[in-house]
Length: 205
Image (cartoon, rainbow, N blue to C red; front, side, top):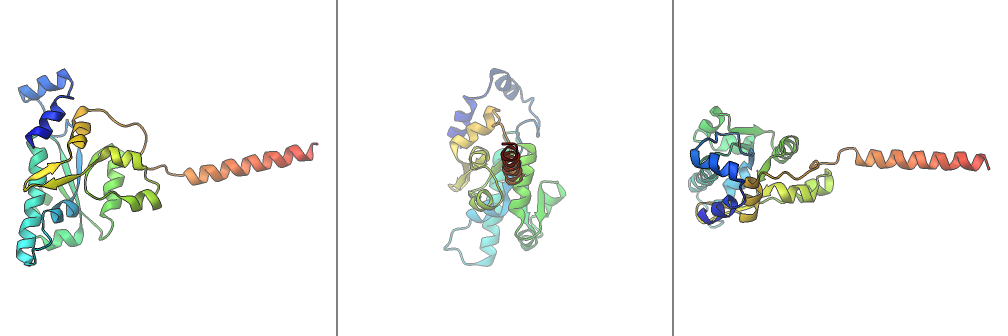
């Protein structure tokens, strides 16, 4: 983890480095990171673990490790997780809800809310999900998602992919929206207008 952080540190501006050394940064001043809660938590549970209590303990441990990684680096976080996952990990997970860090979503729609929030705020997303279904079916930009997604592993502590950490702490923002809404409508309108103009020209020949 220290090597990853040192790599990101090299890309910070001098002004940010000075503020960081003085401890001036507060939660929320660095880019907000959205955590794909169930994806992160379950990545900490090895396939060979079959005991339900141990699975629950490891899942919560993984989520806590991820949150701690960003907390000590003054990065604000929000966790999105399906309601079923949240209910299945009570009461241990309740402090995150009371702190306004964890947000439960309708079952099966956690990715929808996660990506919408990221698009609206330019946030980074911690997840090993490549969101290919959202690229294919919902018009999300693969390039935007590749820039804003932070893959990770556990070894056994949370360890994000180094290049993604550099992008997060560099302060550079990729221009453009995650989702190109209405692109199909625009194309249809343009085609219809062009066709109509062509017919009008034919009538005047």
